[in-house]
Every structure is written in structure tokens, then in C-alpha cells.
Image (cartoon, rainbow, N blue to C red; front, side):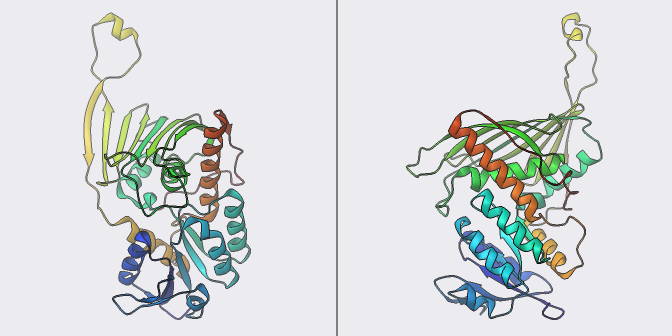
Length: 343
């Protein structure tokens, strides 16, 4: 590595790339040595913006953040791996399952630290939810429901809503439950005149039988980021826009109404909104990756490329289901269990 401070590069200066540049400029122990973007120039702080990846590599970065369009992730990632440069690759890992597998193999073969930017894992509400599920506060988990909708993001041109947005929900669902997807069934709509889908509904189940449901679109003026996990003791609701986590407990009030007493359902109990520290998820993600590259990070502090590959596989199954209008079963991954939470 380049001395006691790490040298970081950034590839892409779109909307997300500029957020990465801002955070890298604040990150302790890291120097942002250069950015690659066809426009060239310099950042406000004087960081050079070079037009080619070769010119960025000449600045000898220890790691690079890949924030270019998804279609370029494979080519850029393979080049970084070939030059021994660690990488934090924005989600989704790649545009196809084959490309994602090539990236996994390339970085693993060289023993390089690499991660996927599934930023929702670092949202305080979801981190608290994962910890509480691990502690058994909900008991057996029955169902995970997510809704992710809002206006069309004009920055996206190369993928549809499944790869751009639904990959958030696929990853977070597997992560908070510690389970993998067993099957999915999906329907899509394309209403904006673009070649890709604008809306998707997904139902499915996880390997332990937990039911899942995802509603994702960029056709709504309502911006919503909703995750509900229902289990035997109640329901957790996470709002990742506000980073709030609320618990709705099952009630314990008895009833004398015979017809209702015979039905083994639940009633409304206490509601608790938890107070949690609310650090910026992107900053936490960068801190975890920096520490992993430096060799000082906690185990499972990053989203590995192999986890990113699994998300791409599920997204591909969603699109296959929507095209064939049937259910698609997913084979078990090569790893038997998912890692612990990135806390």
C-alpha cells in the first residue's frame, strides 16, 4: 500500500460519483489522488480529473471507487484487478450474471479486497433491524415486504428499474434475514418510452420459507423507501429515507368474543419508534471499505463481490420471470450461509 495513508481513485463523476468524491474528500486516512471522467479538468479542491483509466492508474491508487455506468463495470473492474488495485464497485456489480462472475473470479484470484456499494446495508434503520432480528426480538420471521418508488431518475440510461432499484431490496432482504432467495415470480411494465422496464412487482420465498414481496418503480411522484418484516411477535417497519425503525408489537389483550377467540390471530399492541444514531450511510460504507483495504476492518464489514453476484443472479431471475410470466427457482449459492451484519 502507499504508505500509512491510502491513495484512492474515483471512476465516474455522475450524480453518485460526485457524492463519492465528496465523501472521499472527508475520509480520514485517505487521499483522493485522481478522478477519471471524459470531461477532464479538476475538482474544486484541486484533485485532477483525467480522461482515461490508464492515466488514473498512473497515479498509483491503492483502491478505486467504480461509479461509472453499470455496462462498464466489468471492463473497468477487470482492468483494476489486473493492475492489483482494490475496488469498491457501485451496485449492481455488473450488467449480467456472466460479467459479475468474471469480476468475482478476477479479484478473488488475486487476493484483492473488493466490495459492492449496496448502501442500504449501512442505513441506521436497517442495521438496527438486522441486529434485532439476530437477537430474536421478532421470533420466527414470516414475511418481508418492501416498497421503493419515486420519480424517474434521469441519470439512469443503461438499465431498468430491476437492476437499478430492485437490487437494493433484493440485497437488503437477504441480508436482514440471513437467508437466500429460493424462488421469484415477477411482472414488469415499460411506460416511459425507454427500452427498459419502469415498474416491477415481485413475490417469492426465501430458503427458510419466508415470504417476500417487492414493489419497485420510478413512475410515482410519491417517494417511498419502506421495509416491513413481520414475525410471530409483531412487525418491524424501517423507513430508510428518514432512517427510522418502528416496532409494532402483537397485543396481549384477551377477548370474550367467542368467534374471535377461536381465530388464532393477533391484535394491535404497543408501538415503539427507536432512537438510533444517524450517520450518513455512504460515509459509513467508505469507512468500512477503507478499513478492509488497510487490513484493520471488522470481519464481514463490507458487501463482498460474491454477495453482489448473488443479487445479480436474483435480479436476472426476476427479469426472466417477467418475460416468461412464470416462477423461477434459484439454485443454492456456493456459500452455505450469508455473513453477519455489516455493523
